[in-house]
Amino acid sequence: MSLTERVLAWRSRGAAEEFRGRSIHVFRREGEAPVLLLLHGFPSSSYDWRLLLEHVPGRELLAFDCLGYGLSDKPRDFDYTLAWQADLAEELVVRHCPGRPIFIVGHDMGTTVATELMARDIEGSLSFKACGAVLFNGSMVQSAASPTLAQRLLRGPLGPLAARMSSERFFRQQFGSIFSPGHPLTDDEAEDQWSLLAHNDGRRLGHKLIVYMDERERYTARWHGALRDWQRPLSLIWAMLDPVATPRVLEAVRALRPQAPLTELPDLGHYPQIEAPERIAEALERAVACSDSA
Image 1 (tube, rainbow, N blue to C red):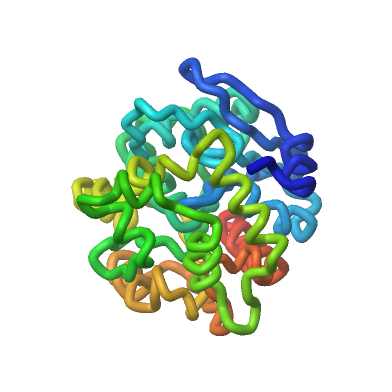
Image 2 (image 1 turned 120 degrees about the horizontal axis):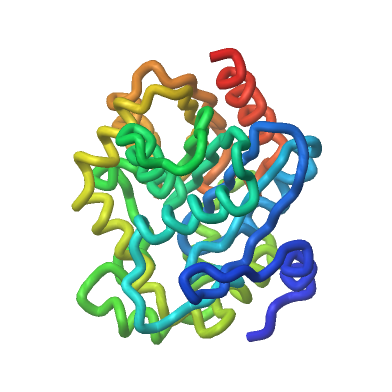
């Protein structure tokens, strides 16, 4: 399937850059510090952030498609790890924003890329200055999450077959099921997201990309420890109608970080930055203000 005109327009706003021999799609916008480092989730891409941009018009932004996602390279013979994606994030920050304060924004899988960066900060090995973070609707406590049928199939023993058999119709049903009733998945959004997923035959990679869930279990002590012990300002935003990263996940995250400021969005689903980007922007600006005053 070819990319839609809307996705092509998004691609033209960014650029392809190389990291470790792989082509990565990067979006960069100059503006007011701190730089917002936007980390997307599974199975989507930095395209998820496009609607948010107009609601934070003065902010400096850096977003990219993780390897295996969106407009970035999608190698078949690759072991996808969140550590690799975190390495990529560090390199792009150093390349584009040297010396600038960085405010990390993570959604879904991106929340765990964020906690890896936080763990590195605790160790003193992070290559940039992080000044705060916002995490939202990510199953950081994997045992509390409720994965979709598609995620369970991809993670199971028949994962490679499930990836090969994936179809646009099944994708639309599964992806649409995690949006809220009041803000349903539109036909245009579904078409755009499928075109990005299918680009460069990426739909066959689902079983390889989903291993981030296994990593969340393997590195529980490290990443939960980062949530608990990171000394910089950390805020939470949570869309409460999310059927995957449910309120039960939020409770588990808050048990690790009870002092974190929380904004609840009671009527939104798993992709609040698509459903109501203006509300994410408002909560994000409050979190940035908290980090500025810390």
